[in-house]
Length: 349
Image (cartoon, rainbow, N blue to C red; front, side, top):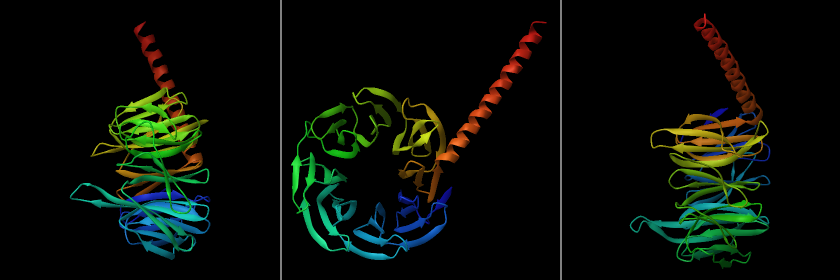
């Protein structure tokens, strides 16, 4: 199905019931149920950068604010301004951790960042200020982890009382992205290194922009447009080069294989590519507008684009369409084979 906002789409996410939440660059946020019916719409202060679900609450970062919404009605339970832009948010042990950063246009750099802790009722517990920017925040094994930029770099473990334990890695290059894997959290660095919490796993010549994993496969998008999949021994499985990759995600299973979804952008045209995650074979592709956000679960994939459109693919329908195209292709191939036989018979007379 296709739904839309009245502005460019900045973030999308599914809750556990396949209800869809989408937020825009100008602060509009909407919720649809799993059948695509609009349940509510709300206007917030600014761009919706992240969406997190917890019980009957939706916790989002919107411009300079951390906002808590009632998931059923969309009404604002509470909101607080932070110092600089509200970037990323995670809930751990029924408490909210959110990062913020202050960007200086003249210096073309981030001047100061902070990590904030709030209760689910909106009470500020503490704020931890730092020179380094946390490029992501996630929860893993009851720990809150951030990947840090310069000057200190490395990764940080946020303590419940408001302290940070810094862990240095083999490379001092800033961490740009991170994700969970079967072995723990892995980090993507500006110098092309992929590392875990203890050692280097891989090294590429270009900066790591995004990372995603499925079982023992790690897929990295690099600054120059390379998309590379590696196995648990850090050996290349497949790789493809092209236009810059805007977003990537692991999708649902199709024809007994897990899918990988990515969108490339040339500056003029966008292309959605769906691949077999095990060998990289192209399952489907289509043109799409500039895309900055993607989300998925075991049954659906959603992509939000700058033209305001929100595209949702459902597993069973996707598989039926792929199978239908495959059958039509086989039928067309058989017809071509019959025609070739007739032409050969005519030539041999």
